Amino acid sequence: PKHLISNKRCLMKTLFSFKRTTKLAASLCVATCLSLLANSARADGKIYQDALKSTTWVLSKNSEGTSSGTGVLIDEKQKLVITNFHVVGDSRAAVIFFPEVENNEPKVTRQHYLDNVKKLGIRGRIIATDRKRDLALIQLERLPEGAKAIELAAASITPGEDVKSVGNPGSTDALWVYTSGTVRSVYQKQFRTGAGEHNFKVVETQAPINSGDSGGPVLNSQGQLV
Image 1 (cartoon, rainbow, N blue to C red):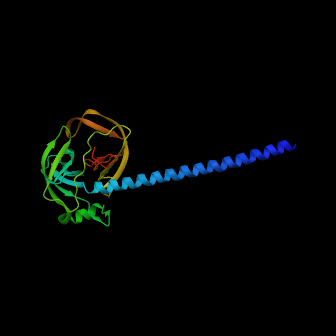
Image 2 (cartoon, one colour):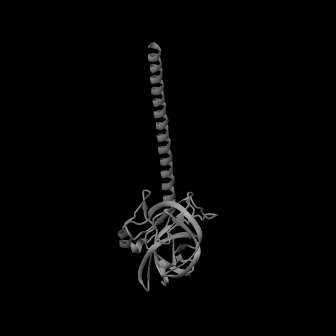
Image 3 (cartoon, rainbow, N blue to C red):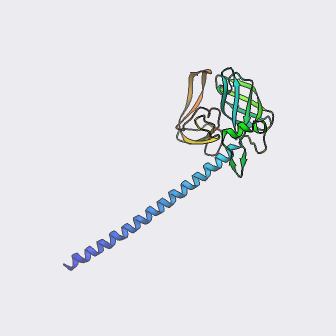
């Protein structure tokens, strides 16, 4: 019957129109998602570049041998770098490296810094330690051009927020490695390690941490030290 044929044609047009609308909506969604991802990547890239000005590679010799870790510049005027106590142990001095950057690209190969230790290495004196909080403060003889103290966050980070970190993991030949993750919990914790008894507030994250990352900055989405 003619009316059934007419209804069928009307239905086909409706379905065709729906498919076009759905495809358009999906395309807009994909475009929006890609735009958000691109903006996020650019923001993360800027946070990393800014953090490079503050993040150091820390080498020290103590009673247990040579130790490698990470530190972060927190005071330009007094030339103070903070790291973990277990990175320096009972050592009274350390050698500190800031990243050498050319054309906005950091040189990240370990051997480059070991081969140029006289030029790039900076002597540091360990002036304070806190075993309970696993912290050590290092005062440097000088700062390289472009070094900048990290900005401290005014408040603690909370569960669900994104965090970024920069460190020097021993599992790779690269230095100043970027890692991102999410905060799982923030709480007071008592525990024991080879460095002694500890009691402090911890930020537990899903970001992977490796030996050598110790002492490196953990940052919020504004690039502030949390």
